[in-house]
Length: 518
Image 1: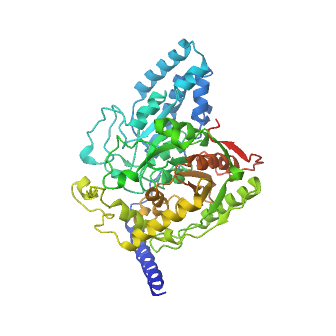
Image 2: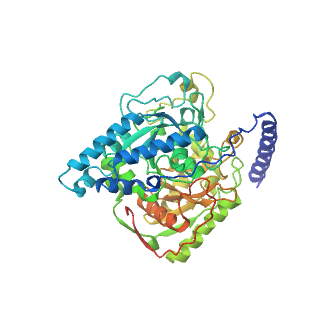
């Protein structure tokens, strides 16, 4: 009992200190920007509200040209980027040239639409890329001033696979410095803003992707995730994202490269506005390893076992979960039970209370040859790395192993776990400085190597996105992806920023989903 009392005491003390620091920050912080209360202009071109896989189909069928689609997205980026600062370098002229070649190919193809679909499933569809990935001819600084002049000479493998599938890159998007913070802000490109409320952050480290996709200025994008860097921006910006099972998608071609045991925790994955684009993107980005996921197999949601964990058990380091997020997750449970006839089991998992400590211990652990990971200080040429730890405690390692066993046994081959995406709604700019450990809600699943899909669940009273994480057993990505399709229909999926309509009515009658339905 004594350790628990001490934990509670330390938690209360930490929150008091944070409140004092936060009050001082509000007094000393710069005044709100004059345009923080502005809303994004509404989407006028209907091409911007078509899922990527459907755009590809329209291009193959000559219902629309790739040039028209690419130009529509260029126009939208030019319209909203001055407000959100998401795209940091474009390649619009090259993209239009590539779109012209696509349209010529479509006209000259004699094998029919099916041949094009099989060979080039994303033919003519534009996409964006996180700046930490290599995209030929584009900067690759990861927000580090000392790398300001670095330009990629090649494509990262995941980017190359999307290009090989016919997709056309429009440019690169902002991220946090060295991909190691909860907000996409750096001294090279500045800060990225949330399209729902410009005075709030877009998340990190793939915040540029989250913001540009949610703004209707990109339909699909490439992100990376070592502690929630796909899922937090997707949550804060109300879009879909997927952290695959570890090791499925190649992580090469990113800066900084992972070291120590980090290669097993870093994941590259898709980010998109529409759930139906997740599976096609993952199939392409995973290359031959996509076969391990059986993504074309039918998923009968009514045959799955569902679990719901409402919080981490009261870690003194993380914030309490916002009541609106708890209520949103409860609504998911109610819909699942009403529509599918399943019984969702609510659980508490005590080891989750140590999520940050587990993440920090494993991130700083040496590889199998005993080589410790490159520190943040080394990458920055000075400074400090708050997550570096020389010898993780045996207790924390035991908690990690216990949690790994419990979740793998719980989820098996047919289980899906609901878990909050983050304790708070999208925070105001710089506020994560006072809640630096809240990312543990996402980071723990990187350490466990489990697949996780981030799903939007409508908007809060303040007009900010709500959401939930869906977690499955290793290699069972299709379960969370199929559940995401269901939740998109049930809760409306992405909402255009500036529209504050709450959950739409839905008469769902779909107990069975095919995981790659288009």
